[in-house]
Amino acid sequence: MATKTIFEKSIKTRKGYTLPKCEIDNNISEIFPNDILRKDPPRVPEVSELDTVRHYIEISDKNHFIEKGFYPLGSCTMKYNPKINDIVNVITGFTDIHPMQPEDTIQGALQVMYELQQDLAEISGMSAVSLQPVAGAHGEFTGVNIIYNYHKNKGQHRTKIIMPDSSHGTNPATSALHGMEVIEIKSNEDGKVDTEVLKDVLSDDVAGFMLTNPNTLGVFETNIQEIAKLVHSVGGLMYMDGANLNAMLGYIRPGDMGFDIVHFNLHKTFSTPHGGGGPGGGGIGVSEKLVDYLPVPVVKKKNDVYYLDYDAKYSIGKVHSYFGNFLVMLRAYIYLKMLGDKGLKRVAENAVINSNYLMAKLLSEYPVPYQKNIMHEFVACGKKFKEYGVRTLDIAKRLLDYGFHAPTIYFPLIVHEALMIEPTETESKETLDTFAEVMLKIAQEAKENPELLKEAPQNTPATRLDETNAIRNLDIKYNFEA
Ligand SMILES: *Cc1c(COP(=O)(O)O)cnc(C)c1O
Image (cartoon, rainbow, N blue to C red; front, side, top):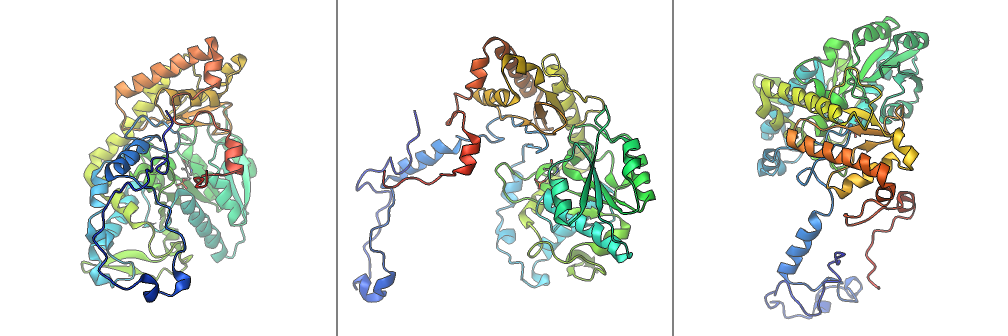
């Protein structure tokens, strides 16, 4: 049965609240000028308090969320975020402070930021960290800006950024925003950077090389030190897209691999709910030679007092109002403090073992073209189902009928009919087993009853949508007149 809107549940004269009698005797039109008074009564639904609560409880689980079920959306790291984060996030000592308060009244908040900077620098092997960018893409944007200004400061106009064909769309986008020319190189048969191809495009107008490690295929770039050496030999800088940091926490560090800049997706790796695009954190870490280029302010500490330092010599300036998304930082801080060194390593271990376990369970029906050195996620290929008229999109939609969120589909572009699956470290073996069973069942359905998949989903509040039309003719408003 379709859910009624709260207006459809409205019954004339039904009340949620009874207000005390108004104590002002005057007619309201004697107090306020007539032209600001409303002509018609407000259109509000007339419902009881209980009906209102039931209404919102009913609609609250129409969508998918991590507390409701498995969410293997590759690249996005939809891990479970411990509730302690949210409990600390509503402490008024944090929520009621204002960014323009004097520093001596916000020492606690500055300490959180300072220690988070230190922890992220240690985790990444970088010299200094700025927490200002508010998304991974924003971190990239900041990083490319720093790369450009670093060269400019040395009197060089470098305009080329190299990246592999597996890279995330934000990589070329943020480079192009800075007027960089993007040079895409083809990955080798293992899904990794082909160092011979890289050598061919290196020249002294290369500003930098952008790489995700593990890359978007979930594959670890084993030649990373050689790659860094090659890029550095022509004076270019190494940028690491750190969206996949989950896979290496506590084991290996971008700084030790030769990267000069890395961004952190605090909302992915360090635990902030982000389905639907809530506030994020995209801080960056840089190597010694780039410390003076970081956005200002950076939080520093002197004689046990925390302060905001605006003095970086070549700073690119500010990239966000005030200091970034503080409450996302607070969540990351709590997450790190609660896990500690050992806990962080367990995150990486479980993320990698979960992914490899699930891949092994699915391989009989879902081949993975690049499976050497698979880390925390893998990309399966659904091409073989085309012979039954079934596409990856249909498989993804059918998964919704079984109560799972779909994996990322059609990315990365170098795998046909891609299904990008990231189980994350927070899922149990039992959940992975159930998901694998359903995936294998769907493979069977695709062969025997392809219509079932093409008409999916059927068990969700909305069935198959025309996504193009939905975007072009957005209509989300309730029609009051109907
Ligand atoms: C998510 C992601 C990004 C972009 O991060 P946002 O925080 O969504 O802006 C960049 N690269 C990769 C590989 C990602 O998975």
